[in-house]
Structure formats: structure tokens, C-alpha cells
Image 1 (cartoon, rainbow, N blue to C red):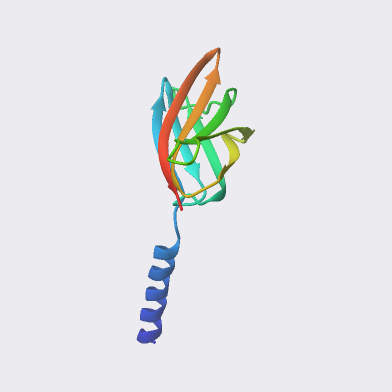
Image 2 (tube, rainbow, N blue to C red):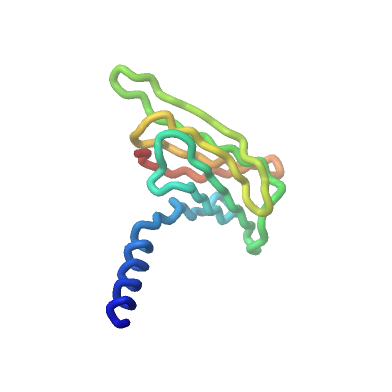
Length: 129
């Protein structure tokens, strides 16, 4: 019985290590607290789901903004720069979109939040595999 319990615990530990958590970024953008999650960690070549959660200074969810995700890879020898953008769709308290990273490497991500005529931006980098 003890041996079975030990095997069960080991399997749970292995499963926990194998489970990859979402890629997360938490940053301030002007007056907003922004949390960005990508469903794969690390992001992969191809489709990656991205979720953006925005809270104002009082901690309330912001659900009346226009949120756009821009992603780019700088030019390299023999290859032009790649630039893409996608509008998000509000679902509940989160803005959701799908990014398609066309190749492996370092990508620059900018989440642009427009509300009340003002735009705030969160920038970060990811390495797609």
C-alpha cells in the first residue's frame, strides 16, 4: 500500500512539472494595470491565443476600451521585417484574440489600449519556438 502511495505521489509531481503554465505578463500602462496571458509557454510558431485583462486605478475591470495587439519581428539579413496586428474581442472581463507567429525567434508585442481618446501601450518580447 505504501509503495502505491509513493508511486501516485511521484506521478502527480511529474504531471505537475509537465504542465506548462500560460505565458503571463503584468505591467502598468498609464493608469491601468494590465495582465496579458498567452496560452502557450513558450509561445509557438502558428496560432497562440492571447487574453488581456485591464483594471483601472480603483481595481475595476475596464470593459469599454478598444484593444489591439500588434506583433512584429525586426528585419534580418535576407528577410524583411514582419508586422501584424489583430483587434481583440471582449468576452466577459477579458479581451481575446489569436496571434499567428509565422516563424521561430524573438517577437515584439505591443498591446494598445484606447479609451476616452487616450492610448496606453504595454510592450514586451516573446521567443516563439
